[in-house]
Structures are given as structure tokens and as C-alpha cells.
Length: 401
Image (cartoon, rainbow, N blue to C red; front, side, top):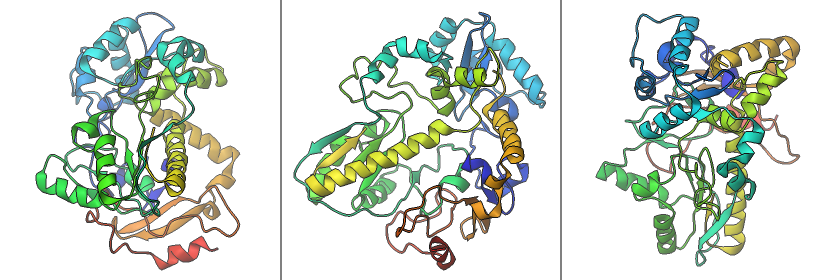
């Protein structure tokens, strides 16, 4: 929900004017062109009552071509017309046909299953044998060490959802590095040389192919005498675990809506609304829940490292934007207190050169300051370094209110 509450210079995520204040990371126009944006959506298939969530990810062209549509259609500007055009194309295929097309094109779509159907799949059965996260030691000789700062590393040549920079970069420094460039690889290696936690959010195996997977980091940890906590998160789960041979979907790409649709959450959302059809939940709970669980996993790994040493690997038809917009409108009516100024932080962002507003932390612990000491900033705003990190005095003071 926080992504919907944040503002930049008084403008929220739904305001089209905010795009002019954020670096444009939508390199393939997968977010800014409505027709292409709706290539990531839930549609009914050829079989009545069966649904499939196609997902064009951050480049809609392959998914649109896959279902027989052009990658761009400037004539289509109306929301309902876009929906009708794309759903008509999806309705030409069965779920099985879409799954095969999806597999061949390496796209992120999934059938929309009930919870019972998902539990009966090989993937569901494999995950039932796992806890929410697993911790594995990779070597046992490195000494304990304290935790540092947070620095997201993005590539200047890879697309991203622009507004999320406002929400998720609070308290951090951000840098951009292209790991196919030898000089920038050296900068990345200098950064991880003194890191404590490495968070891998790419598809399973991508960082390994780039030379920075768990085995390589284990060697770096042994050489420097201090272990890493390597947190790997992916959509389907099960990779590099004891059930990896049964987790047949573990290497599939995915997103929040994909997880919600394949596990039965979308069907439960629809039934909650009195419908006999699935609906993508209004807020990205799977995304933020994964982030929260990843933090717990990282802290568990840090505790194990501090006490034991070692390097640990932790392992229907309205779009999510439309559903979220309607849910927010209702929440403002029934729970207006959630949107009061007292529930929000406000600070000046030097990176965005504008005032930003974001939700206060949901947790209070007596004697502990919980929050951030620097405002959010765009991706790639800082040098790849752990040195010279600033603190904004008003934000530090705000922590202690």
C-alpha cells in the first residue's frame, strides 16, 4: 500500500505529471503505454470459467506477439478498448495452449488456479515440504562481523518500474553498474568486498552466470576472512533446496500478480468480493511480504554468522492498477485516519530535488529508533561506495519524536 501513499512534490503514483520528475526507467514503454501495460493482466481463456494471467514483464512486445497482437497499437487509448482487444486475443487459446506458448517464449504468464489446484501441482507439493525460507552454510571459517548500509545496484541498460524508486529507495544510496563492462565490474567487486548482505532478486542463475553466485561469493568470503549472507528470492521458490528436483516451476519468471494468481489468492479475492471469478488483489502484498520475509531471513543469517561464522545462502480483467485505485478510494472513505498527516513522513529529497512523502513505520519498539536517516532518491544517484553517506538532521530528529 505504501507505493500508493507516497508522493513526490505533492504528486502520487496515479498522477501522470509525476513521470516528469522521475528518471525514465521504463525503457520499453511497458508501463507508460496503456495498451502495453495491459499485456500484464488476467483474462478469460477459450474455456469459459478458466483464466490465464499473461505478463509482458518490462517489455510487452513478446507477450503481445505471442497472442497474435502487434507490439504497439497507437489507436488504442481507452482502458476498456484495450482490455477487450487483448482478452479477445487470449480467448482464442486454452490454458494448455497458453502454457506451451508461454514456455516457448520464456514469458511470465500462469494459469489462474485455486489454492486446492495449486497444492495438487508438483510445485505446490514440493513447497509444502519447505519452511518459508531456508538457511544453508557455504563455508565455516569466516569470523563474525557487523552489518552495514543498503545500496541497491541497478543496470542503466535494464528497465524498471519508475515510481517504485520513490517508495523503496528511502534510507539508501543507489548506484548503477553494468556488469558486462569490465571497469564497472571492478567497481561492483569493490562494493561487495566490504558488504555483509547480498540480495539477489534476479531469476535463478542470472548472477551465477555473471560470476557472482553463491560459490564465487563463498571464495571471496574465505579470502577476506568475513562471510556474506546471500539472500536469494524468486517468484516460485524451491531452487537450490532439497526439493529442487520436484519444484518444477522454480526457474520460471514471475511477479506479484503471477504469485497471487497461481497460488489461489486471486480466486479468494474474487470470492471475497462476491464474484465467481478471480481478481488480482489491489495491493502488492506478495511483493512487500517477500521483502519483509527477506529481511527476517537476512537477520537470521547475520545472527548465525555472528555466532557461528560462515557464509549463509537464504534461500478478472481489471488490472492491478485499476483494482488498487478503487480499493484506495474505498479505504479513504472507511478508514480516513490511515491517510492523515500524522501517519506520514515528509522530507526533502536532494536526489529528486523535491519534497517526498511516505508512510510512517508500522512498528514501535521502546528504546529503539526505527526509521530512515535519508530521503529516497532515483536509481543510480550515487557512487558505488560505502563511504561518505549523509544523514538529514531533520529525519534523524523525526525518528525520536
